[in-house]
Image (tube, rainbow, N blue to C red):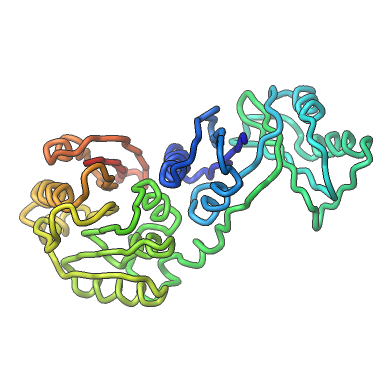
Amino acid sequence: MLIAFELSGEHSTLPGSEVLACLESECADFSVVLRLDGCLMIEIRKDACRVADILTKKLSMTHYITEVFGIGGANEEDVLDTVEKSGFEIKGTYSIRVKKIREYSTIDTGLMEKRIGGIFFQRGDRADLKNPEVQLRVLLTEDKSIFGRIMYSIDRSAFEARKPHNKPFFYPGVMMPRAARALVNIAKPEASLLDPFCGTGGILVEAGLIGIRVIGGDMQRKLLLGAKMNLDHYNIDHSLMYQDACGMALRDESVDAVVTDPPYGRSAAIKAESLEHMLTGSLREIYRVLKKGRRAVFISEREIETLAKDAGFRILETHVQRVHKSLTRRICILEK
């Protein structure tokens, strides 16, 4: 089955990596067909509906999962030709929506919906915009059009409800839930996940909500107490430790994923001997406690690739996120 993942615009590269990591975690038999700006098209050769159903409960940076019936050119006649030649037969009522990705296309989406509706009207199909049995969708990318049926819509409202200021304990400057979930998914945890700089527990909450046992550590007791409040609020199985990330009380190779967002700047350097010491020591400790062949996701405002390699890691990916003028975050995906 050919499936299109309509990606969110929150980041240019993370949404696609999240989809691929989730597919790998589910041991899906798949291949990448097209990588487009804002859309990732995948062929899933076995149990596609089951895999899509699982992913819709995990993904955070995807809007829709769509079964693809046709791929064509980007101009108006190409779109109509793709729909007509798709061979898709509607069973029940339908709705049709045409969506531009990144505003590449100059097509009038409202007019195009009417023209596509005319094709189905001539076939005797019935439209129902309020409660359709089949939701059809056309994606307009830079140079292609994709026609298909929406299989699943990701419930993004749940992530909005878990924004930091809505949790029992709030502390400014923490990661948003959608980003935290995406990084958890990219880390591919199987049973356990560690965040050695857990702060208020935002990353741990997102991991716990998909059934992962979580372990957190921090050097600020206030934040650890806040993390416990937040984790208890969501009934998440957790262990929290007051500990230095440069010397953790965990056995060698005892966790199967790590995601962490260490503190930045002068305040972090004061608590450690130096920022360099904190980064070097924590990377070595993460390498020690992580199981062989497993992933760590490490966020930093500076390049840590050399330090990570010195610790023994292999660099899989680096994603760059511009927060504001003076802060760019680097998200490094590491493998032991």
